Image 1: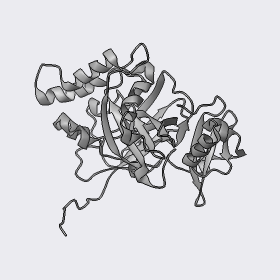
Image 2 (image 1 turned 135 degrees about the vertical axis):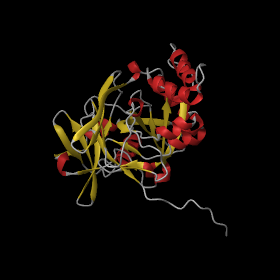
Image 3 (image 1 turned 90 degrees about the horizontal axis):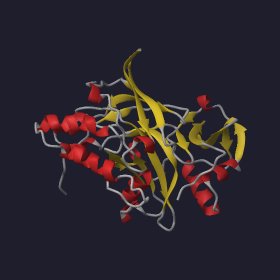
Length: 330
């Protein structure tokens, strides 16, 4: 089930003088959505009214707003972070296996196909069933709950014990589970999934560890269907210099899995169909600065941009303070 409309294409959440609001971006620019303080509340109201999210927002359009004068927030959040789950899939894009295969092959020093390449080829051969049915299941990982989502412009803080903090330019699907336990896709966001590639390179079984990191979404929620061919740019700035820049692609035309197949293999688990929960699910990428030998440093700024999104994902890299992981007994 998908909430769509041809009239409005993008929604943003913002904060102004301590008060939250939602704005819709359409052909005539950005306008405030009246009587709406969060994207979640707006989506819930649309579902209750039996309307599309875009149509419901379009019926509430108010005054024009200057987005540059507002504090923009992540396009989706939940008052209780435990009810927003962040996850993703890997090896889903054509070309995405090359860097991973090199990483794991050098570690294994084995001429046989790596597990990463085997997983990728399973997707190439069975990730887009011709009949639209269920295809090969992808690699899947968990990142955290809603507390890991970083607001636009805020630092992506890698743990003090991390070996690397590297960008991953991706598209994420945004979902709300309805009262009947059915996943409803309310839109898409441009994002930086962010991982520790040095840890992953040490042993592919550490992938789960490498993904337990924050993630950033751009401020816009794209309504409707995802374009088949998305082309964007991922870059890293160090001071006044562009340290690294490379184009990236997404959309089903550039993927080895259909979106419907990725969605099925996530939501087939009953625990991910809890009414009222939100899900942010990253669809993967084939472009990493790490694959080009880039070593990031605190203070570097990640930038991800791609049409039809009009605003970039932009966040500096930082290091989180050390925590206390020592277990005590009572």
